[in-house]
Length: 341
Image (cartoon, rainbow, N blue to C red):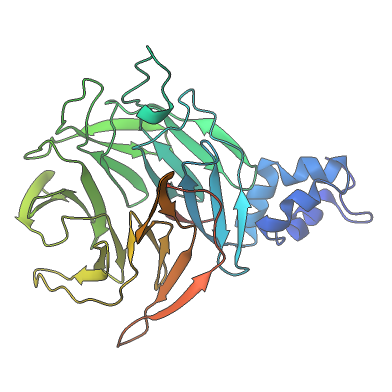
């Protein structure tokens, strides 16, 4: 890079470019070669950190387009499409996704049976881990998980990624758990879960602890980092994936959103959406309900999918406020998470 801005050293020019929001970065590449190089450089990423310029996004992957993630910018109410995930598995499904230190991580997963050609068994479970850097717009292959897995619990605790449960490459439920250090790009085995079963499991981080819940059970396993052991407790949010806002667990139970707080096992309906298969992501004091299938609206060609995005904003008290965000592209939502860049 040279002569980014005439009359200014490149170091100063980068600090100026660092304040340009991500949705405008494609335009930077159209200015000239040096700006295109700067827009995709690690130096620009460092400059953003130096000026403490951050943006929040909701990251969503749908069945279509194939292996493509979209980033929702809540400040500007628009969607940004990323380069497709370069996995060898087409239409990868049953994976987990989280964000750490400004990067999106996509972990594990396997083939979608509907996309596998005849006489091809596909890949049931992989241990692949990919990271996406939004500033450089590049995917990178990270150290693989120790255990290939699908439909597993995943969460971030103290800047490290914890995965547990799910099904391994032999299609059997696994109690194995492991933790990933993004800074050193290394996986370490953790103590096994106390139990597992033939159901998928969900994860949530509450009060700084990783919680693992198997569908259809009333028990939760949470990891005690001091004793380095999983502790079992009663849980009331076992039927659906959950998100956490202000240390409160919210669950979308098909037709309504409910919450469970501490051990009160209290459920309160806060809204009826008439949707199935809706996924959720939390950002600050908001919950984003993304996609889903409209209840009662079916057609001969298949399910009636929606790309709607409903935002619930929680105040200091009373029911949340509702609003509609810009709809996303794609049909069945495979995964979503929030990210700060």
